[in-house]
Length: 113
Image 1 (tube, rainbow, N blue to C red):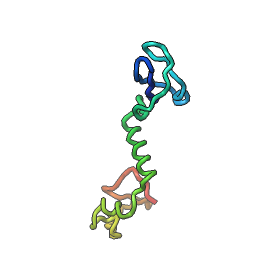
Image 2: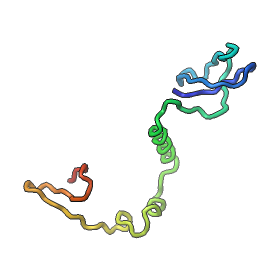
Image 3: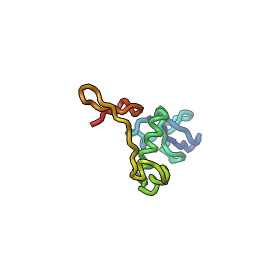
Image 4: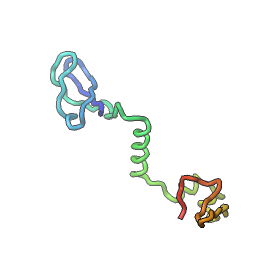
C-alpha cells in the first residue's frame, strides 16, 4: 500500500499509508484531528513492496522510455563476443538412442528443437 504525505495547517506534515483510491481525500491529523489535505512533499512510495519487485518496476520503467539500442548492446558484449560477431562456436552435440539431442555443458533446463 502506498504511503502519502499530508500537511496539517496546525501541526505540520505527516505521512500515512492509504489505498490509492483514497489518496486525494483529506485525512484527519493524528495530533489535532483537523482534516489535512494531501501534500506533495516527497514522491509516493510503496512501503510493503519487496526489493525484487521494486527493482523489476525500476527496470521496466527504464526500458520502456529508453530501450537499449544495438550500439549499447554491442558495447556491452565487446568486439570478439560470439553472439555479436556472427561467429558461433561449434558446440558438442550428443544424441541419445532415440535420436534426441543434448548439449553437454550447456543449460540442461532448456529444451532443444
